[in-house]
Length: 279
Image 1 (cartoon, helix red, strand yellow):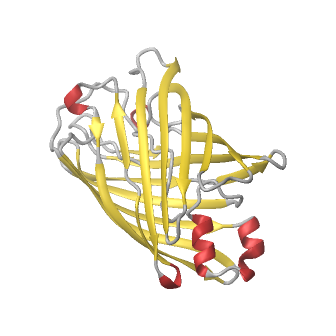
Image 2 (tube, helix red, strand yellow):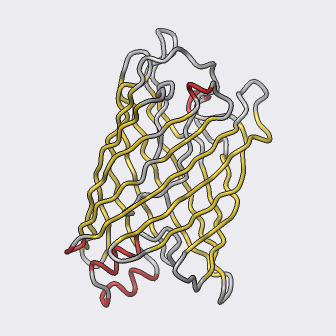
């Protein structure tokens, strides 16, 4: 999607944290979204600007399947590059004339860097993160959704996930004054079950997104995920990235799509321990 909103969970190893190698952290990101459902049925009557507005609304009544790939640089003690491919299907469920349930699921495919001579690089699936947002079918100028979100311990290796069942509240809110889109996704997670020798989870994720739509389906967007790990030391608690994406809405045959590429930089706080941060 244009703003590439996601669950934004910071994948943290259940192992003890090793010493940091760097206080700077860079990421290159590419995203592709396929639009189906209502948008696919109506796209013949919609302009590029109309389709852009649709895919940039995370609570729209349309099925979308975004793929977001993020390569993170200078991770871990060897300053290597890690990678996360997030598959993020969005499926709206019509409850009645007044309410929709928007299901947003993040499935991360992770390549973690080498952490030591004994702990080599890892690859596999990370923890799956679903969001279930209840949203009014006929919203006013402020479009919003609220509901539970979870971290499911589905990682294929202990180093790729939390090994904890976690949950908490999530809020999505946005406004769309043309040609802009502004919004936030805020979620808080607490662990409530899982492996006893895994670190507990208490984590805040706050993603803001701002998109400026240009002629012919082009857009500029920024959607960093600010995260706070409340279990970490204060000097290691926050990740505050910033950056910019450029993208375009287009069609291949009768299939509306949105693609973007961008770069993000994190300064002033420590980078995660060789763990990629999905966007």
